[in-house]
Length: 503
Image 1 (cartoon, rainbow, N blue to C red):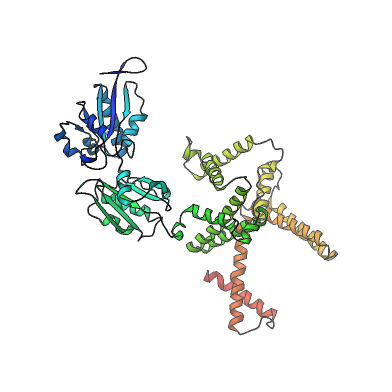
Image 2 (tube, helix red, strand yellow):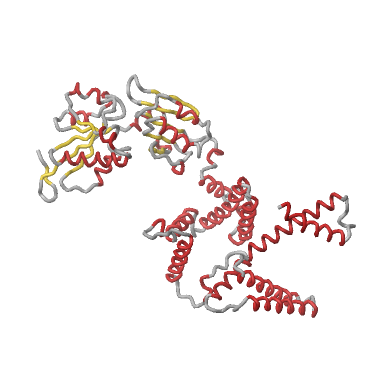
């Protein structure tokens, strides 16, 4: 019997069936009948409990195990398997392709069969029982509570969700168990109890053993019928390494029964904390203390989560929108990584970055100002330097450093005049002092130095020297209220001479 395709020509049919997770007693009736149909039978692998009974049923078969032995990767092996099955179907009206378990669960070769366009071959999915059914029965769990099914050959801790039942299939050898263990340890404690299930549904071979996670790869009976079960955590603290745990905590803090302070906050009231936390991250970087840096990064992330939660409450956006916009921007601004572009050096990356940003601005509404591309979000010194750089690009700049130095002197004189004229003229004094600071930023820019960094370094230098003076005052049992200015000056001069040798 043959079948005609859409074009009217004869096609072969591949009947994909599952051998189930256990022995021949659990073989679906539909699969049993197809295996005894007399049509050619191809097994993905002969390493399965049912296969030993096939000769008794009068079933002859061809195994694809040789492909495993001659392929460098699993992806290559499954692609070759799909190709061979299709080739067989082109020379036979009907072909049975039998795989372990269910045809559509953890069967990449079947997926490749379904996605490959081949007009003269038809794929029909037949019956099969998944190992999920038997495993859930043996473990006495209800998948509707939340079930995550993962491939042990491709472990990834980012896919884990400690709140749900987790089954990791295809843990076929101890090396795979080691990889699975290490991924699980990114989320779960080392001594977390996991259950190893082997040959579920195979009479006389089935085995379940619960062990601490760190012992997972020490079991010497792991084989191709092994699945690892990780139960959902019961202690909320064990979810804290999951990023969305913090999202839920912030949502609770902002909820009806949450914290009065958190509930009261707005975007505007939190603005200063964003800046403060960013500076504390920078300070932790300078300290070179990894633990402190991790803590401060968490505090900065809290600000992100609070703003996202506040926005979600009025329907503006939520934390997933924040993640999505970040991901979109990262991909868009890195065409040399995610697109067809290339970059071999930092300079080439910077050129790409500038080009992409220019394209982004071009798509926005027309802007007349040269300063339109300057971000005014940031520390005042940083913004001042960015404004000066933008103006310089169109020629609005000093021609030489001496002119900038002259401007500083001019601003100093104007500030002195205002101070002498009337110290109560606070607005005028503040304006002139601001002009002086702006001129100093110009000097830093001309020298190709970062004004923000310079001020931070100068502040740290002052702190170190002042702390030296404090130690000298304490060593002399002197009182700050009674110590003479001359003595303090001498300590300060000592600090300038001594500290460079200490640091």
